[in-house]
Length: 113
Image 1 (cartoon, rainbow, N blue to C red):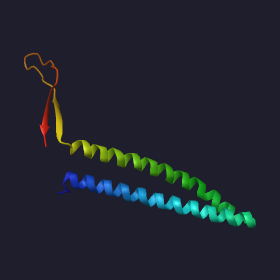
Image 2 (image 1 turned 180 degrees about the vertical axis):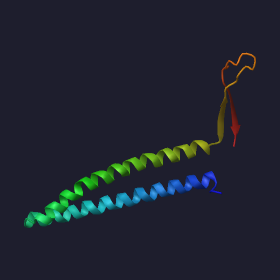
Image 3 (image 1 turned 90 degrees about the horizontal axis):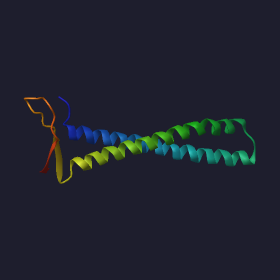
Image 4 (image 1 turned 90 degrees about the vertical axis):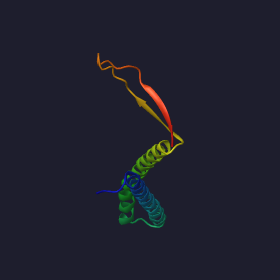
């Protein structure tokens, strides 16, 4: 049997945060590397340095976009968890009249946690 839902959610959140942090560190290192390579290029032209900078640019863009996406996923997951763990939960039910099968206005009930 798998993990309880709250543990799975916690594991998912931790995995997303770990991946986000890994990519963020990679972006920082690539930017630092490009800055160092550019400083060397300013002193003396080197084709390999120029190619390395050009190769890093799309990787930085891709990783930066993924970090932003992960930030959104993490925020949504945390917001959902906050809504669920709040002081009360609002439950809405749709009533169906057995004779006609028609739906009536939903009833709402707040439950304290």
